[in-house]
Length: 219
Length: 219
Image (cartoon, rainbow over all chains, first blue to last red; front, side, top):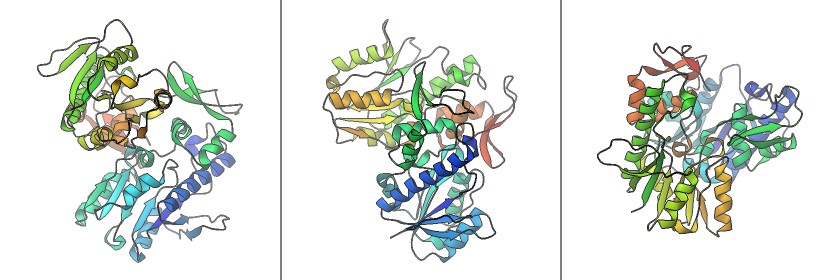
């Protein structure tokens, strides 16, 4: 049973959503997205482990603190000690579901990977964790492809928009309101977010948010 | 062998790319993307048919003119006469490849569909074309799901970022430069576009374009 490592930043996360969510809301939203990812990896038969700087209250989640080092170093330390296959999955891809994650974990290759929007890496599955290391800063998808090639590992790039869609900006919330089914969608709806239509394009609107300029369309 | 209908607008297309491409370049770029889609549907065993307002010079492409009506009406007229299964695929998804399209055309359901960014529909495959009609304006993904449900058709939503990623805005060009392999990527590179890295984020830059403010980062 693979371990699913989920890096998670609890304090002041998702600052690019500040135009529509205040800090307290962003923290609650980030946690709701993380819990959606936790539910999805459990459905897919993985054991979630939260890797974070600040611990948080939880009765049923295994947490590992990041020591005084960056995310990549902390993950690489974890990989070097891992006994099982390891899935590393970002906490901000709440469209993740059992089917998409199983496509990743049932690969026949040594490694499978899902690129994020803009050249990042949203999910990596490593069958023999000791043979790989991660490098998460700036264009990590191409870096991870290169690291795998240099290590002689076969790679499967998984073509999934559910795992490709990281929620960073207001426009991304549209995808969550259309395709989401979990806590993070419910959280947004509870704050009054809904889909809008302007000139044939779908956007999002939120009722009575101080910083909001009403609804805004995206493609 | 399914027909792949590809709606295509030749004149002044992709105006949201005006910040980085002039009109002549946008026309050439739109055609390069369309030809990438044509190559992909051929690889996947479909016969491409271009549905457009303005015919263009081509030796080997079947073209059908849209009469004096909108896209949805023209497509519905086509569907009502179709003898084979029909794939409708947008011309602006140049990351489409044989594997992703075959996932759509080998569905066991009556209909398979791939949502686009922002609630649109990028690809639909209809096994019995007479039983379905399209409605492409504004939030078409949810409309198509409803039309299918009302017609009693089983639906398979295909989870593919290659088919989900429509190229509309400058930020989308990053995806093409990272994941593209065809004519449209080559076209952009020929104009001097390349990936840039700023503060750990991947963006695109273009050498010496009058309207460009240098490179710009995206998430």
